[in-house]
Structure formats: C-alpha cells, structure tokens
Length: 480
Image (cartoon, rainbow, N blue to C red; front, side, top):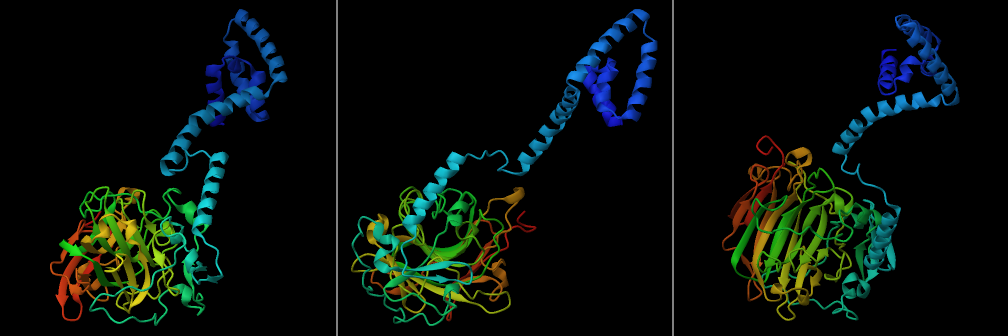
C-alpha cells in the first residue's frame, strides 16, 4: 500500500491530473484501496471553494472518459518511473563484476571468427592414418612424417626429416623410450612407423584463446628476469658470458594449481641469443600447465621457439611451421604421467638441446638418447651461430585476480627451503661447448624476481652436479 501510494504520488507530481482524477487512480487499485483513497480525496475536495470544485468536476469527467479510452497509460508511467530509478543501478553493478557484460553479440563478426578458426584448424590438423583416444580426452593423430606442419614452410616443402646428427660427447648412448611417460600411450596403442603422433587441435581450443590470431604463441614481453616482466614472474638459474651450443637438465615434474585460464605455470630450459630487444632468439622445452592452451590442468611436455622476441615468429609445439618431429612415440603437447607428490614418489624428465656441428640444426633429445626432432637453423638469426645465455627454471603468469597476487603455484607449490620430496628441482644441469662436449656449469647464478612468492636455492654435489630447488605457492602472508 505504501509503495503504491508513493508511486501514485510520484506520478501525480509529474502529471497533476492523476491526483485529481479518481477515475484514473482506480485503474491501479483494487476495491478496498479504491474506497480508502476516495475518502481521502473527498476530504480534500470539501475544503475547495465551489467554483474550483465545479471546474474540478468537469475536468474529472474528461479524465474519466479519457481513461476509459486508454487505461494502460498510468500503469505504464508507473512502471517506467520505477524502472528508470532501479534498473540503471542494477545494470551498472552487473557490468562492474562481469567484464563481458558490455559486449554486444555480433552474428556477422562471430561467423567471420568461426571461418578463421576452421581455416586455421584445417592448416594445423593434417590427415591422419590412425587416431588414438587418450584417457585424458586428447585425440592423437598419427600423421605421415612428411606431411607434418613443418613441411608447410617454403624452405622445407618436398623434404623429409633428416637423419640423426652427431651427439654430444659425454652423453649416454642412444636408447629407446622404455616406459610410458605420457597418458595417451597407456592403452598400449601406438602410431605406426613412418608417422608421428600429433595432438589434435579442436575448435574449443582456439575459442579459449585470448586472441585467435595469436593462438599457440606466447604474449610478447621482456625476457629480462626483473620486476618489470609484465605479469610474468620467474625463479631461474642461468649462465652467460660465453658461447653455448646446447644445454641439458633433469626437470622434476609436478601438477601445480593454476587459478584461471589466463595464467600458466611452467618449468623449462631456455637457449637464448641476441639482445633482449626485438631480435631475441629462443629455443625452449620443458613441461607446462596451461588451461588456456590445453583446456585442463595436466602438466604437458612442450616446445617453443621465436626469432623476434615473441612477436610474429614461432609457436608452441607443432602449431606452426618450424619444429620437425622425427619420433613416433612422443606427442609434443600431450599430458605427462606420472607426476611427483608431496612427501611421496618423485618423477623427472631429462631433456637435451644441442646444435648439430655438421648442419647447424638444433636438436631435442628426451630421456636416454631418444631423439624428438629438430629446429632447422634457417629459422633463426643469432642462433644460427650459438647461444649467449642458457636459463633453467620456473615461470608463472600473475594476472592479479581480485586485485591481489595470484595463488597460481610454481613447481610443487612449496618454497625451495623445504628440499627434496617437497620442493621442485632441476638437477644435473650442463651446457654443450664449442667442441660438442657436455660440461658442468662454471658459474651458475640464481634469481627470483618475487622471492616472497616464489624463490630459488642452488647447490652442487657429486650425485646431482649443479642443481637447485625452486617454486612457491604464490599468494601468502608475505606475498599479498
């Protein structure tokens, strides 16, 4: 009752005839309310002089006859006044919480986007002779090796993968993959000889990307390990000041928590050359958890390369022409299993990247002498010669959800000081010298650009050689 009378009084303030015409007011009230309101209006009318009462009667008759023609008008006015005073506030509140609330659906634009995605998928996904369903939901396509994405490159068209190169001195003799370390192989079904396993990219993978144009690429950023790294935070060990022709390490594998799809957590090796400007060349390999790229939180074996500081060249895995895969047992981008557990079993993967002295290509080896493939030397500028820096360690993206530091974990999610079985590690780190020999690191430096969030502690011993523990939980009392 109070609300209805307030509305009627408000309407009357704008349209005075609604307060003096009882016929119109009755359109909004039931019988009881009508009688109450009529008594009030009659008392008011008795105080008026007869002349004014006469005029009012005539006007009331006109209003009544008009209300019979269009009784919906006063109700509509009531509704519009209430809606205009309440709805804008509610809408503004919604926009402040939902960043997509002010986006307008444009069918033409969405159709154009879908066409671009399907054209890109057709280019990435090659015809397969066999497809394997992985327990984690991946589809692994067995693609003839000469039809893999690398051979779309103009300088590789019509070629076939190269023969194995000369391996670094001091490396174990060539071997085979002796255990299943990827989920897709658990069924025992493998790709036939002459093919390579490629994780199929699906429409939803590209729809998750922040930019369809940059799908499969890292965001451009400064690579220097300092506090101005634009949301990327690191805990790394590195060597510089010499000429490097490769690097090797064993990397502890965990499944760190990543709080949203716009962040990732990875552990990898970087082989770097050039300045830290637009001419930066990198070759990278390791494991990563990236919900945006893969749609889940599994740690996955990955590779990356760029020759212009992550601008227009390079990509993850086999998502562009570049890396040439030679192995039929390892799927780059596939989930790793098993993973390490806190105070439990520990699992690591050994990776070696080195420059073939004869042809100049950069090769990738997994485990005990299992060749994965190579990056052709023509892809690069500075790395056609040698690397000037090698880095090992962890990296996360901190998008500062809710205005505070992210709780995305690095490594095991525990600080370096907790040690073996609790903190993640890199061990047996080495570099390849000018003579194609594996040698220990001579001057390893460690750096964490946000040590209250993620830290690192290095060491050396007879069993692990050069090593370090690293990582952390992200947001905590010392990292708000």
